[in-house]
Image (cartoon, rainbow, N blue to C red; front, side, top):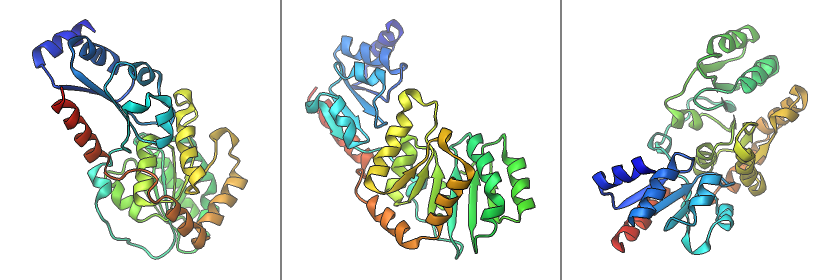
Length: 276
């Protein structure tokens, strides 16, 4: 906190903005001590300890999920949604005719999902016209790609996908983790999903994020420890081939979250600073 106070004294900001985690604590405590306006953004459906503590000290609390508002002082809360990166907001054309499936475990990949889909590759290869895009992470890229080739599965396998907007555009269904940014992107793009929350997330917050979409009818959730290949395969294949249900799930994702999160946050913080 002492270092944060020195930085604030030198920099003289009008606003300090935190996004959770213990790294936010010193700067926001220093802001309180120096009388600087402060705000936080709680990204997840289940708030973290740092933001729950800071809620008493800050002037404005932005939340991604409407359900998170009940954890904080009502008069401070603004349901903003989650800012969507510009690349995802770009429009891309669809480049194939058959069903599209996107599998992603995030920037580092998810070994569990990689192993699961390799085990399902022979069955997936028999789905007519299936186009699979799989982000594996750097560690597993080569062996996953080789396994798909042996199974005769047409797949675009990449260690990392920079053009996520393009990848989403090819997909009728997404299989992924349930981080706040991913859930917000699924809502924004109306992409039905099978969500497999990261089992070691603090306070199991990814499961809470996933349940938000499940309750709305826009996603199915499988806990990693409960997945067996055969029943998971049945769920996956049934969804991929049930176009009516996929369309209904996509409609259920409409208007779940504000789509102009960045504009909301900028407007509210500018008003906050103007009344300093």
